[in-house]
Amino acid sequence: MKFNRFSLCFFDVLGFETRFSDLGLDGMLQKYVALIGLVDRRNEHMRRVFGEMGFSESAYWLSDGDAFIFSHLHGA
Image 1 (cartoon, rainbow, N blue to C red):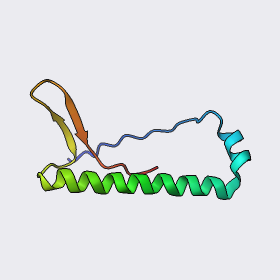
Image 2 (tube, rainbow, N blue to C red; image 1 turned 90 degrees about the horizontal axis):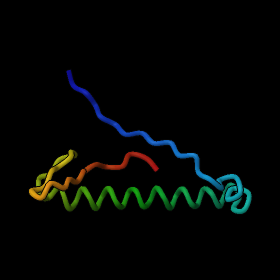
Image 3 (tube, one colour; image 1 turned 45 degrees about the vertical axis):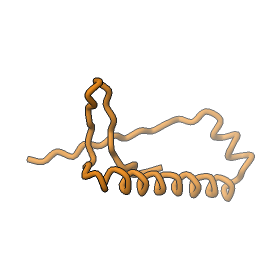
Image 4 (cartoon, rainbow, N blue to C red; image 1 turned 90 degrees about the vertical axis):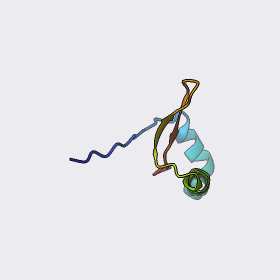
């Protein structure tokens, strides 16, 4: 049996209603398009840097006890 592991986060953003009132639908859309662009660029950078070193998506523990997680963001 294969298990898929996902992290799913929902945030109730304080001030969303005010920001929406100030920016309007088109302004909010521009913000989300910019956010999605940042996520796409981050994923490409991570894929390029860690993929070339042979890393796969996972958690990695370092010799000093710290850890880092190589994982793509699948949303914005």
